[in-house]
Length: 237
Image 1 (tube, rainbow, N blue to C red):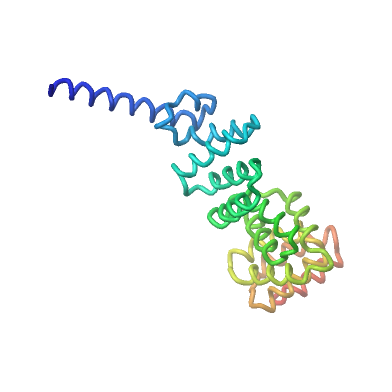
Image 2 (image 1 turned 135 degrees about the vertical axis):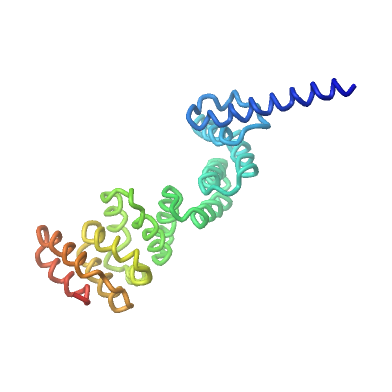
């Protein structure tokens, strides 16, 4: 009897080890996901849910995405996947709630921030849109062309709240000011650049003079008049 139990235990450990190893391999070979036994799906579960969405199997996708979040609730990407499944299933309110939750949990999660930016902009919530723009702005890998398109939509003539919120964010953290000097002259509309910079200076933002001068010089090659106004808006140099 004891020997039989020992054999069963050894076999159980072998099965579990094989299942876990297969699951880990799906990080690099997603097509193996369906071969992973259901109890051992962790990394594989994300691929299973994603494939169901791609195949337009709405009910299956929703079930698999819910199973994914139940097993691994913390990653923002999993919440985002479930939000898409909820939207596809027609559960608009739940999908909207989940994408907001994903954006709060994963501040650097690009798709979630993009979704929240578009939702906030469409709803006329300039402050929230500005905060989501800020989350994308600070990402080192964010494409300048993409940021320009977002900025054009956000910083229109009637964008008082968006400019005020973004300026407060820029003024509030030293790490922000370096990123702002490098990116803002490239991605912000000229009038928004001068306005936001001036507001940030008045709100207590202290820009590095050397980096500021370099930024002004780069801008002067394209827009000399805007560069001079930008220099004045920086305030400290």
